Length: 155
Image 1 (cartoon, rainbow, N blue to C red):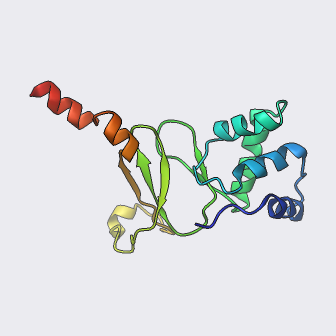
Image 2: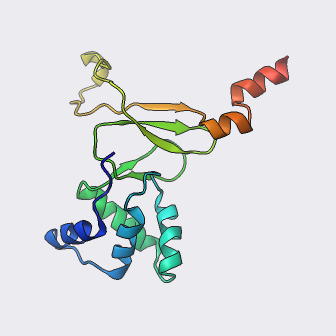
């Protein structure tokens, strides 16, 4: 996995873009470093708040959005709930747990996935992202899936 750049590298990247580097932003950089969890802004905020209690959620969002605009993170949306932020710049896809919301990077060949020209509705395609959904090992053993619950009710 290619992780987010180090806090020092992000500081330099911000300065090259003419963006202000504050202690709050540096705390966000530290919270993201080597964080493979695809965090939400709220989870980054909670992590940073232990170090810097006066930080605002707005500052965290702005910093994450700036990083995404710079190409240092990808903002992901997997449906209802908060956006997630992915520091992995490699070409990859995701596994998403329908139980706990855990997101994991997965490397799979999706080169065979095609969309017929008529189905593109005028879009020019640039990338393909595949999201595999299911239940992680913890959720699979702790609670039945919705299909398993329905089968139990009708049995």
